[in-house]
Image (cartoon, rainbow, N blue to C red):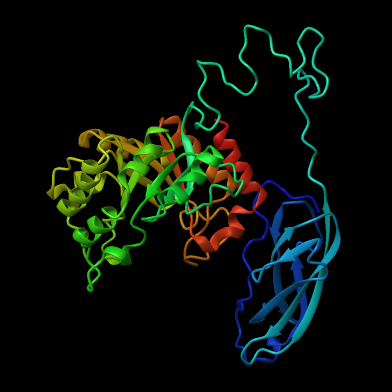
Amino acid sequence: MALGTGLIGLAVILAACGGSITDPVDEAVMLEVSPAEVSLRVGESVRLVAVARSAANQAVDGETTWSSTDPGVVTVATDGTVFAVATGTASVKAEFRGKGKALGRLKKDAPVTVTDPPADQPPADDPPADDPPADEPPADDPPADEPPADEPPADEPPADEPPASTGTLIGASRFDVASGYPFTMSAQHRVHPGEEREDLEPLRANGIPGVINLVGGKSNYSNPDGSFNVEMWKAIVDQFDPAIVQEYVDAGFVLAHYVLDEPHAGGQWSGVDVDPALVDEAACHSKAIWPDLPVMIRTHPGWAVREEGAAHTFQCVDYWVAQYSARKGPIDEYIAENLADAQILGAEVLGGLNAITGGDGSSGIPSDYDPDDWVMSSSELREYGAAWISAATPYLGIWKWNDEEWYWALPEIRAAVEYLVGL
C-alpha cells in the first residue's frame, strides 16, 4: 500500500465502545490491523493500528503486543510503529489479549515490503563527477591564477564555518545535531561545565549552529519548594570556561543563550510565576560574561508586557519565544500580537510550534505526552511554519520531547520540515 501524504493511523485504539466488559459481547472474535499491508522505502516508518472487535462489532478492551518476523528488514516498536531497515519482505505480528474481564486472544499478521530509496541523481546540467567538461582543467591541475584545491579563496570562509543564513533557521529542542534530520539549527543544545569543547564541537562538525542551554533542567536551580533560585543558576553558569564558549560564539556556531524555560508556567515552579526581576538578573549575568551573546527566554513577550512579567522593566533579554498551538487562535493574529509585544520590549520574537500537543485535531493522533491534546499534522506544520517564516522570525523552534521519536520518523513530517527549510 502506498503511503499517502497525510498521517497514517497513528493512534492505537483499544478502548471499549459502549457496553460493559462483563457482557458476553465483549469477547473478541476478530482482530483488525490497519493498514493491512505496508510498502515502505528504507528509512521510512508507519504506525499500525490494532482493533479487536466482538461479534457485535464493538471494540474490546485489551492489550496488543507487536513483533517482526525479520528484524533485519523491519523492526516494530511497542506502539506499533514499523521502521524499514533494509530491502526485503517480512510480517509484523499483532497479538491481542483481552484486558480485565474482556475475553479473547487473537493474532494477526501485516505483510511489509521494503524497497530501496530513490537513488540520488545529479542535476541534468551537472557533468558526471568523473568526467569534467573539456574546457575545464582536471581537478588536480588548478589554473595558475587560482589557489590549490585544498585552500579556499581568500574571500570565502573556511569549510567548517556555518553557511550564511538566507532566512529563518529551523530546529527542534533536544535533537541531536548528528541525527541527519533536515533541521538547520539546534533549538536547545545542551552544554556541560568542564565539557565545553566536547559538547560544542558537534555543532562545528555538522555545520549546524545552535542555541545553547548551560544549566539543564529546572531541578538544577530550584529551591525545595520548586521556586527559582537565581544564585544556584548563576553558580552553574560560573563553572563554564568563558573563553571556550566565546570561541564558538565568534565562529558563528552559538546563536544565543537559552537562559530560562517558561517562567510564566507557575505550575512548573512553586505554583506562581518566576519573579521577573530574577529572570532579568539571570539574563544580565549571562550578558556580563558574554556581552555579544544574545539572551533568550522561552516565554511569549506578552508575559513581560501585560502579564506577571510586566512588573519589571527588562534590560538584558534579546529574544522571547512565542510557541504556537492551534488552541491559541488564528496563527496570523497570534504572530501579529507577539511581534507587537516584542517591539514594545525592544526585543525580537522567535517563532515556536508545539508540534506534540498543539494540533487542531485534524491529524487524528492523540499526543503521547497528553492524550487530551493532538499532535500537529504535516499540513499544520507547513501552514503554521510558513506563517512564521513569512513574518521573518530569525529562528523557528519546533518543540519536541524525547519520547516522541516515532512522530519525527514519519516521512510526511520529515517532508514538512524539508518544505519549511526550503522556503
